[in-house]
Length: 103
Image 1 (cartoon, rainbow, N blue to C red):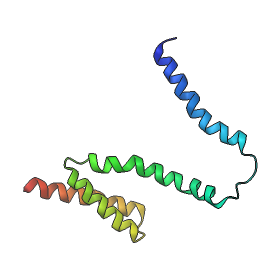
Image 2: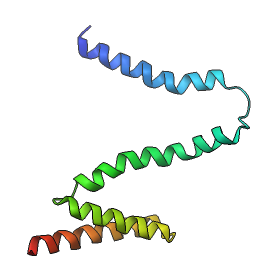
Image 3: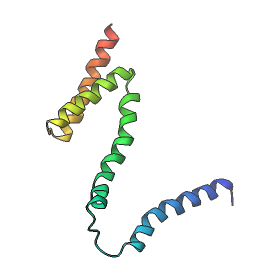
Image 4: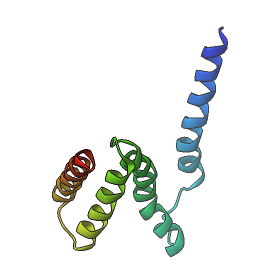
C-alpha cells in the first residue's frame, strides 16, 4: 500500500469518526440551550471561514474585496435577499476594480 493511500484512509477514518461518534453517543434529544445554539450557528461559521478569504483574495486588488465585503455586510444587515446581496457584492467589485484600473 502506497503512502498516499495510507493518508487517504486516515483522512477517511477521521472524517467518518466525526460523523459517526456523535450518532452513537447521543441517543436522546438535546435540551441544553447552549448546545442547541452552538449547533445552530456552526453552518454559518463554517460558511464564513470558507468565504471570507475568497472575498479578499479573489479580486485583482484586495481593496475591491474589502469594498464588496462592506457592501455585503450593509445589504445583509437590512435583510436583503441572498441573491441580491451576492449581486451587489459582484457589482461593487466590478466598479471598484474599474475605478482602480482608471486611476
